[in-house]
Image (cartoon, rainbow, N blue to C red):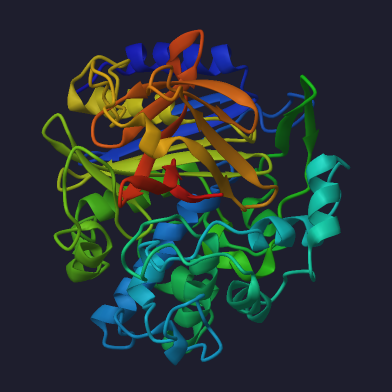
Length: 471
């Protein structure tokens, strides 16, 4: 058993350093709820403390639940994961590819070749109420071709956006919210009931997740919460602001719209860690979990994108994890596969990185120092041999275009970079991988960069999990 008092002190220190308004975290293991941590408040007046029953947004942590629904349907013979997406949406098309090339499985694994693009950001801007006017909102409203409130509008934009497909379908992993939006509607068709109903009946109810809901909006979640639901915080121009204007993005329901508690989410992840077992019962088919994160996905020290969860080996353990972020939402959850432990960290302030909090809890259970570096990019302590291959400008179009530039001299010296104008120092980590850090602090990681090189030249760079194409 780990030292819960030491973990309390460690997590509290991280929350104080980040000046977070409210955080709830939980660990479920073989003995049930083995650890609960709550910090701060759920309201702007700081009158109501966060607890393990407080509803938070979980954002993209929703994706593995959507993928698990697809895997359950596959086990029941109701959905062929290798079926072309065009079987369900005949109008679906990727630039330069046969209509049949992209499959349901590729959507779930982010390998369909869909490049980073704008629809999710447009949908938030056009459908969410009460947002403060800022440059992002004005630009999204100016450029949106429509309200981006139906799946047909997303599919139409993918076909006509003019962006290149990222390799052949199945070849390149690049995170795609649009892919998961389409997957949500495929599940509707295969299940014969809405995703919201299927997820509630087949995942939430069997696990006793009574404070969890897929709500494309907020009314149903508020009703479920009994008033114990967080407000949403952001830092704008150095000042913390608070509102209750939850993100609304209608066709992206299965991507990001689950609301839950730390206790419920740790319960969910523990079930996956136990291959579908919960309280001694097989509530989810073991084969469905295998399809999600198991033997069908390779294991190494580098992240492997499975279906809605990343997987890797660390210190003799199989760690699966995923983060999420929206307005007033920063979340991260994970599990130790085969060991019966599930973990969740939920925060009510947007644009915050929850890695250190989740990794502290993981390290506690693994018996490691709480501040153990769990990064999967490890400095190689030597120079990259071919910087001219990666020199250039790369662009991603998810919302306001994001640009990564790599600079070096003609002789290959002075390798450095920028992301959206911010200077970066690049630390080589083997292969074509680099940690991009703040120039004055090598421990302050801005992003991970992995260059995709063909015929002596990088055609793209994976920034985190998104592939930006050479401009």
